[in-house]
Image (cartoon, rainbow, N blue to C red; front, side, top):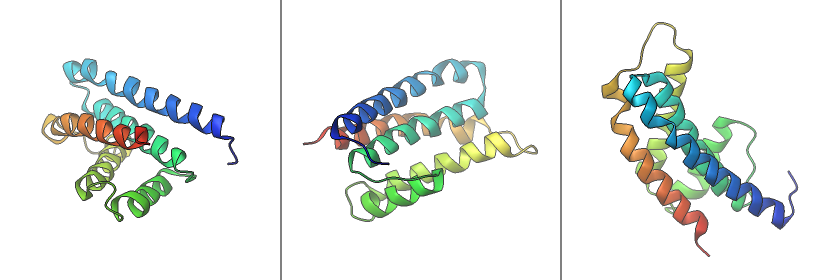
Amino acid sequence: MSLTEEERIDIVKYRIEKAEMTFSHIQINIEAGYWEIVANRLYYAAYYIVSALLIKNKFEAKSHDGIIRLFGQHFVATSKVEKADGALYSRLFSLRLKGDYNDNYNLSEEEVLPRVKETARFIERIKALILQD
């Protein structure tokens, strides 16, 4: 994708806003006990913030796996992001897949709820990295 610098900045801003908006949907679903939806929203909030980081740094991915790979290769492996953040992002992806596609398994509060605070902190750390320089 060939973007002008202005387009890149606009997309990054939009993805940050989308991450924050998506995360804001979580509380009402926690209250309703919709753990699959909470897991989905956690993953997508993280996905939008990571994709903003990649776009800002001119990396392009065509799939969720590609985003995970590029994030790991360029930010986790280089210690720009903590390994725990890379592991959390992968864990959120796995939870979303389990919740969205596994017809024989329901996610539980115990699996999902601890990820809420972790994801909030993850979003703030990645956002700070994006806004550097």
